[in-house]
Length: 425
Image (cartoon, rainbow, N blue to C red; front, side):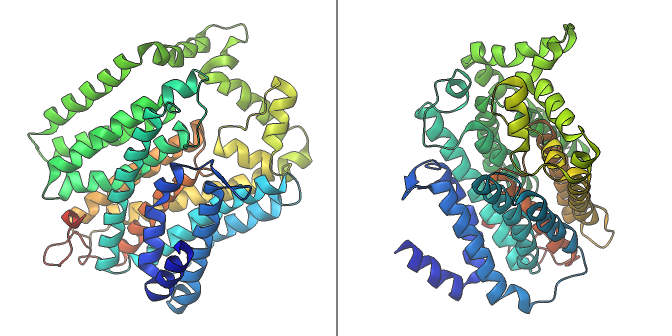
């Protein structure tokens, strides 16, 4: 029945079907490791997402003109990853990572097309808010069933629910649409309350990288509020600080252990490699493996290479926890360079909206928020990795919306006089 409903929806309303399917990702996260016929719910959802995206492009996307050549950069990156990774590592792992990267790029280009109209822009905004709400709900479920941050880092987590890294990064990236509502919506208090709940959820994940990424967004929002002489800025800052302190106090012992290992950075004697849950040791190991010979530096070693290097050196099968190192060891300097160009594409796409004199004040403000979102994305990409997480789809929604809005100056869903508004979410 679900497949039949999805099939009917794709053919009758392809745009709505794509956005709705993406919006419901948290339902898959709630049981991401449940096996159905030997395949996890998460894998099934990812395969279904690619099918829905493919149907959209076959039914609608290819019939519409592609704007410029901006799409060329991320598409080449997806093709290059397949060329360097397939055949040089575990096939199932390679397929899983390639599907996540491919769906990120394809969904971003899909959202760009959908955001070519005010109605499409409003649809993405509404879906983003719902995505944030559902993510918070799954965070609560994970916390209640004890596989979330405190239990995860205490080694007690055995669950079918998505882990804290995936949920917290989704919360950070989906918060973009919540911040838009808090900036420009009529019911700003409701959006700020949702942002505070996301802050608590991110704090309780105990994932330090998402702390930092979310803090960047909070600071940007407070700066925007002060810049616009908002009386509520101090109250917002106080509320956010109180929420963070309460979350930290509730799990102070576990949080202390998550922070204390950072002192290894100044300990010397080689102990600095143990800092950040051993991040520096992992990065150093992967970097040595990636640059061991001219051939590995130029062409990489294929997927799973980071696991092999870390396992051989440190005795633990872990990946690099860094997008840039992972792509370097997978496909060499060429694949890494392409990813850097994709990062530049994200910055240019959002900055174009932020800096265009043809856009309204509201649209430019949202553009600046989206630039801050890219900064948060890069922080997560460097310190923990993000492009290999399905949560990167929320960033695809952000950049797709930015690129679509850039093509409708003065007539975006934020501008006065049009029938759709932020508060419709």
